[in-house]
Length: 121
Image 1 (cartoon, rainbow, N blue to C red):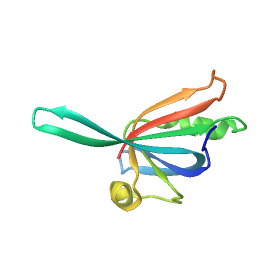
Image 2: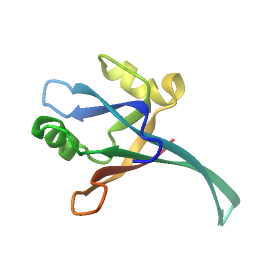
Image 3: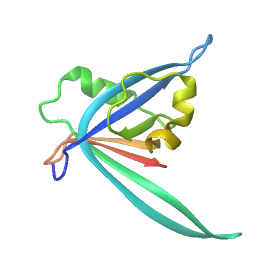
Image 4: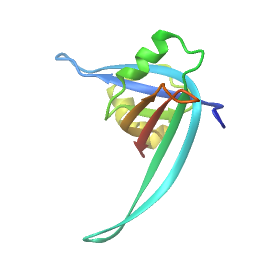
């Protein structure tokens, strides 16, 4: 996959009764940040859309199963992060430039199978 040479960390939050748990997984993929502007009732509103693609060829079932667990509200960032707690998770956008996952697409039946993650950050 073109430019799929960045180290990405996805942080999956598991909500538990006694407190949340966080899992950090590293993958190699592409990272693209795009500025978006829309016209709202209060004028122009700017946002940054993050697009990540993680190739799945040669990926084991465990890694693909982890990516299938991702959902809205999880985080994705460029670089490595070994572990995460609630305070770190809340600050990832400011400290690591992380994006909040909006949607995850698993594209397995295409010429270049990959997982496509859309985020805002």
